Amino acid sequence: MMIRFVSNKFGFSLIELIVVLIISGFFLVVGSFGILKAVNAYLGQKTNSETVYKGQLAMIRISKEFRNLTAVRYGQARSTLIVYDIYRKGILETHKLSWGGTAGDPLLYDDFSSNGNPLVDSVKNFQLEYYDTYNDPTPALTWTGSTKMIGIKLELIGTDHISSVFTDKIAPRNLP
Image 1: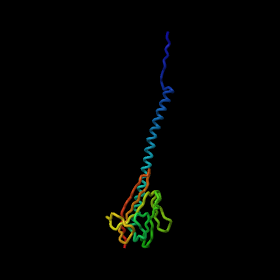
Image 2 (image 1 turned 30 degrees about the horizontal axis):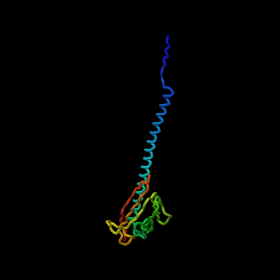
Image 3 (image 1 turned 180 degrees about the horizontal axis):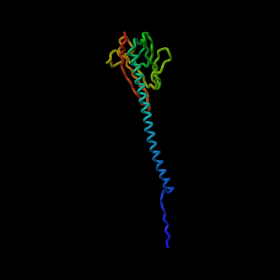
């Protein structure tokens, strides 16, 4: 008479559980790298969009200032500094817009009542040019009585050294 051993397999063996856990762990690690990459891309895009927003606000402020200026006291072509006069509430004030010239320095707005307030930070390049006419291809060397336009170039540094460049030409309305 032969004895038969009948094995009832209801469940998993320890080896099967370990193999499933190892495979699941591998998929989790690989998936987490994809999720991490997506999160970093989102954060970088968010930072770059904030940089663009700050640049747009700075250009709006600069455009408003330059449209209303009455005289330029100091201005040279391809300069990073301008000193100008502007009326505020009927009072003539002198203001200065300057950049240190090193990438990452802020663009400073100074009304000579403080040490200069940052208008925008993370500036890679800031340059002013002066034109006698709107279509003039070459800027004048300095601000003169015949100057009619101020060219502005503002470049900001974003995430992964992605630059956002803003340019504009402003015709001051209150020049003599």
